[in-house]
Length: 348
Ligand code: NAP
Ligand code: ZN
Image (cartoon, rainbow, N blue to C red; front, top):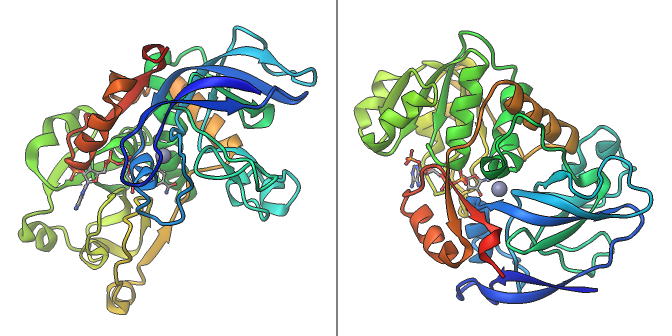
């Protein structure tokens, strides 16, 4: 066991604070990463504050991790000390069930081992995330950071990137499609950049006008404010695909009405409370409501490679770890442009 500096929270009501955790000695299939950067996802806030229930404390959040390999086990072939490596939302799975063998480790029948607020596959050992100096991960779950990516801004691709790339691919978003992205935060801004790069005509549906200039810079052609009820009248039946990234409760029915017949709205945002959906909102045009959960390792690598090839990078505000509690508060106030990334050199 190695002692590793981290930022942890002891309960849903306490702030994150400096702490020491234990990491296992690397086994033959493991890669040890010295964490360089870790993004802050709104899921970190939901979980650290136990908004989804069942949280495990103490908790070290962080599942958008870019690091430098410091050691590797003897069976590791794809990584060597000195290389860059990245870790996303999970660190292990059974690797044998049907979803695992189809590259959907996120849906492992035995239950995936999430990067934090979870346990290893032994179902006993707690997992701790990327707000720490070092992480030990089985090679299969470590991603390669392509040369074209900037190291300091790449971390959000490991969650915000794959979570928006995956549904755009699943629903085959393409040239000329009218696509709306609801909420311009960490996920939303990646959704806009990715959908625009696939040729879609993108609209951002936002709660205020303040992010309009940024949205257009990211590739949106249109920007509409959802606080104004007239917006919902004007845009009725307009979109073939809506990507909903909103973290707080809102009325799905109003957004479903914006779909064309046979259109699909995909939820990636996970508000803590359920929200009713009226049958009429769906049957009115054979509309579909779906969900999407991050993506498997193969597709996460595809996301990194796609972003390197298309020169797509997250917009980040780099902070020292001592500002993490303030960053959570700012995120809740929609004051994030557009992802906080912790520079782990700030933790000694
Ligand atoms: P974020 O950066 O905080 O962005 C959320 C955005 O939602 C805000 O910027 C805001 O955009 C909009 N919003 C906030 N409150 C709203 C309200 N009451 N009504 C309407 N819009 C509101 O969060 P994030 O990191 O992108 O995460 C978004 C959600 O996705 C979270 O619930 C997170 O847990 C979830 N998530 C899901 C997956 C998955 O696999 N499905 C993966 C990662 C994260 P505007 O200012 O433009 O209105
Ligand atoms: Zn996330």
